Structure formats: C-alpha cells, structure tokens
Length: 166
Image 1 (cartoon, rainbow, N blue to C red):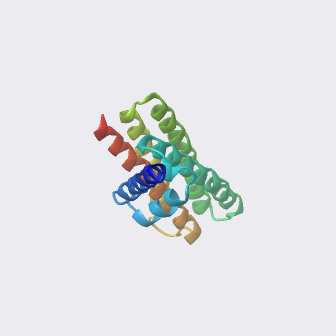
Image 2 (image 1 turned 90 degrees about the horizontal axis):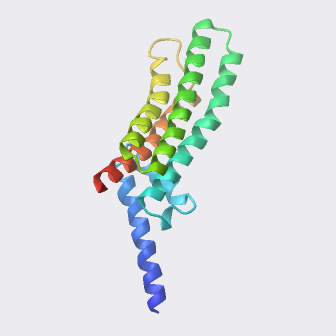
Image 3 (image 1 turned 135 degrees about the horizontal axis):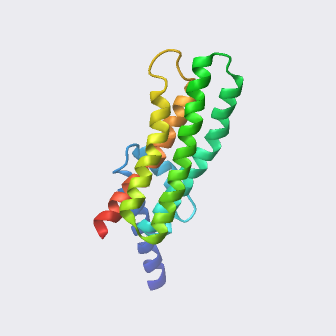
C-alpha cells in the first residue's frame, strides 16, 4: 500500500509539473496536448521536460521545413518564391538554435539555453512577418508557424523556470 501511495504521489507531482508549466506558456492548451501525451513527461523533472519540449519543437520544425521548400519549388510568383525561401532559411536557423538550446541544457547553461530558444522563436515569427503584405501565406504555413511558436514558447517557459531555480 505504501508503494502505491508513493507512486501515486510521484505521478500527481509530475502531472502537476506539466500543468503548472503549461499554464505559463503562450498556448497552454497546445502545451498540455503535446507534453501531456509525450512519453516520459509525466514522470520527469523540469530539466527532463526541457529536453522533451526541445525535441518536440525540433521534430516539428524538421517536418515543416520540407513543406516550405516544396512551396519554393511550386511557386511561379517571384515575390512568393522569395518569401518562401526566406522561410526556409528562418526554419533552418530555428533548427540550429534549438540544437544549440539542447546543447546548453546538457551543460546546465540556462542563460544560453534561453538565448538560443529565443533565437529559435524568431524563425517562425520572421517567416510570418515575410507575409505582412500581399500575396499572403497559405493557411497551412500560417498554422505551422503558429504551432512552432507555441512549441518554442514551451521551451522558453521551461528555460525561465529553470533560471529561477538557479
């Protein structure tokens, strides 16, 4: 009975860590959706959530990048083609920055983690900014940018929480 109680308490504490963290993000429902279903998220600590969130954001960015590259190849409008190409570069920068974020989390260098996570956030944000005037971005690209921003927001929130623990 005592073992069950200890495991139950650990599970509740880990789930509350996910809920507490997600409540501080830009998009709490997205955060709860992705971290709530991520393997290991319900049983890890804040640093572990950092790794999980970086990996989720990296996977998303790497999956979206070929889609954006296909837009470059399909576009006959030179303005759109240039904007899409800029987005390809923005996503490549975001991927590099997320990889650096993970490296700095490994080293325990939380300020650098936060710097690179913020740089990663600029990728989809700048991609969106490329389309401030007509012609507009396709809805699928806008949705992808918004989702990646939400995922990187989770990394930024965890970085902020880790910085307060130091």
